[in-house]
Image (tube, rainbow over all chains, first blue to last red; front, top):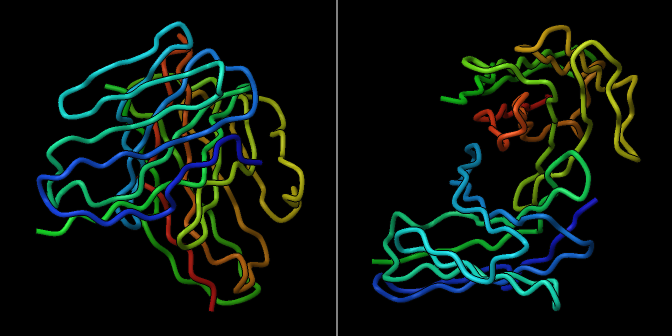
Length: 109
Length: 115
């Protein structure tokens, strides 16, 4: 089962532009996490935001959380070609992490 | 810290054979391990959750007799794909949660191709 839905499914931008990805989820959460996956590789944890937080920053990443709308967004500022990857939000309604469908980001130089 | 090693990184096998994938937590004790499957251009789908020393809990639609999971120790879980068929070709990823409850660590994944 999948907890979250991301949009857009695919996003293509130029280097230097900002990329925004959105995620919606279904159940109540304690926290929401964002992961990155390069093609055919494992997952890299990017950032975790707790249910009592509304916004969190980490370097060029900015995550927001709106628990009333059950949604989160990930903003990558000043994108680089190396940011090209798939991005997933994830929650754990029970023990396991459940992932959204993901957004594939392509950054061209 | 918190490294999970998954082997092999890729494997090609013939239809009808079995393949074993290992997932080891290298520097922490993993009370719970998770197995995911990912088809091309899709998200990770949870297959099963395993706790050390007990039977795995499988998600709906996942055949437990086909995907055998063993979690015999706090640092090792294995997934065996039995009688593999081409439709089992996929990317399999394991994840481990620490005994102290701090986060999830993922293996680097195994690309299985059944020919």
